[in-house]
Length: 100
Image (cartoon, rainbow, N blue to C red):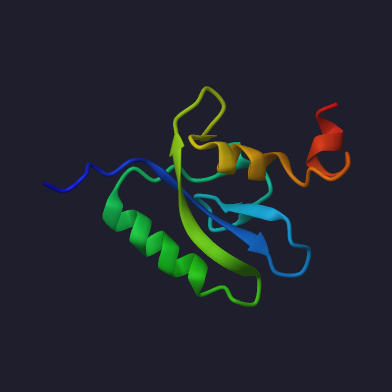
């Protein structure tokens, strides 16, 4: 029996800066997980993944990551994605600096 589809977001890394980014409903890239498009349909997820993968001049390492609805937008499900959403961990800068 096939597994039920779990909601996803499209994520990648910015090609020039390396930041973790997320695809929004308006086809823009955001550095904030809660601004990502929460995709709840498997066919739509595949279409969005193909769209993002075609932007090789902007992004690298495109994939679908599990997410869940939250009060402010999509939230990461797995530790890895929660860690990526916080930004680099070697010292406080970028996203981590603004949350201090």
